[in-house]
Length: 114
Length: 113
Image: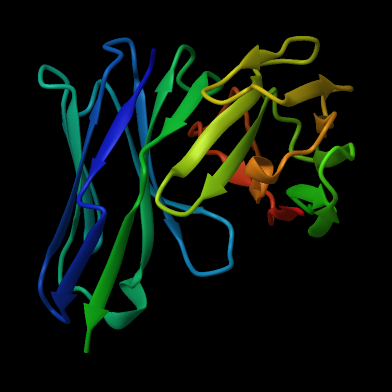
């Protein structure tokens, strides 16, 4: 079945350093890859997403890269700030990119130390 | 627009009791989803509905049933609650236009004792 693996499960960085979170997916038909941030006690919120016809996408300090051949995608956060501390989830959509099954990774708890 | 609204926000059940979690969205989205979130397990898909009138099993459907009542509403039912179903439940919706972004409800914290 469809599966999304996410690593690492926890990540601690110093303020100003970069953070990288990696995900792999099993279904080669996956075509949409969003990343969500969840603060304690709150709902997940989309921070960036990428479609299968794009290799990289940036939004200020956040970037996502996709390697379709390796079925691998990554989240890069540069110049980390304490407010970046949260749980981050990757996901892969199978079927219609807008309405298909959406499978999430296990999550990464990011701690940014001041 | 309220987005995605879930009720209730908190619930305590005794083992064997039944209950229905309600979810409604006002964004005219076709697809709706139910997830459960447990520590270290991420968001696991229970059931989803790609469009009104259709439902499909996700990763962890056992012990749950769903109903896509209409385009707006997607309910999750626990027929006989078990302690293993203690979790935070999130409903989400996605549209067939735009970015494909999923919008989440505020979650329901369910405890089964």
